Image (cartoon, rainbow, N blue to C red):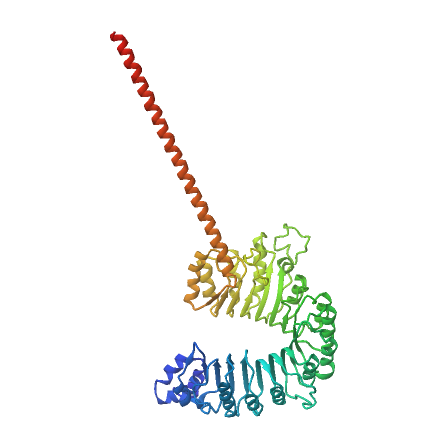
Length: 547
């Protein structure tokens, strides 16, 4: 049965090459699949398909347009039905800004705009065009500098936005924000400004968002954190606020406690610095039942027992990023328990209950030199997280030499226990010393069918690693290791030392051989001299006898 509705349904699951093939079958299929083929168009230095002519002739189908540091080769008037526009600009070119302004004005149905002007500043005409987009809901702008007039236009646009991301080097400060009494629709607000706008004005922008649910606020570390004002956001200005990420502020434990206590319901929390301690954890406890996202990666005060408490107490957690967790805490062993407590009966692990985890970044250590059972029990805890698609188990702190203290990813040490992680698409063990073999790598690619990226060295030997990585490359799995160069230098140095030793051994053998040959020659000379002397004596005796 060949119906347009069925073709439209199938088109959602086809990639560009498959869509192109389907569109070439017949007129009916061309009419069904062509709109999906041109729905998302991306142009960059490396990827510039479709052609300019194809874009202009099929512009009515384009809904999302990505431009990466490319001039607009086609006529900006061609596209009139865009809903999403994303672009990157590295060079301050007036013509490019003019074309972008025209493109925005020609697309009144734009719902989201993402701008990356990393080393330049948006033009006034472009910001004016953006401010006229009446249906715009999402604005994500990264810039090097934003003038006073452009800042006014940006805030004019905020009146109807639902999501706003501002990331800039310098943003003009305003003497007053009274012109904008309220940003009534904004629910998600990310703000990261290096300089210009004062902390007080930034706070006022948050305070003017009564429906705000999520804040990401990064600030200069030299500025003191306005803890009291942040607490007032929850109680006075933004009663629906439930997600908070504070970056750049080095908050002490007592300030984190105040913030957590002022929030009626914290669903997502991220904080940086050494301040997060036991008191902060106690304040977080009342949010455990509904906490879905927690980032404590840069919090050195978050100890291993604290992380274990979180893993065993947060049933709704989907994202966790923390520093490290000791295997002893996972197994329920006290510090004074000796190596004798190795049996399953002696271990008292508390089961992790965050069964909805999709992303876990956590260095699990304390396994080096320990009984094999320890790792198997740790892996059983990980195997319970069947929804994981992102897993990082390597150390966070950079060390040029891979650590031997961590999870050993081999079948003989229990890798097969993780067979339940069917949704895993990214695995990171960078910084951990591994010695996988072919059977281990093949097991990974066959057991985890969605695996797309592996970060780490599958084997400590470069030669063996290259052989094993061929198996991953055959499945188009991306390979990354951030410590390759350091480790390769170490291995090269080891190889050089080994070569030097071999060369020294050879030289020593040559010298010994030369000594032996010289001794043999000397011995032969002595024997020859003795024979000559004996001959002379015999001749003398013969002459005397003749006389």
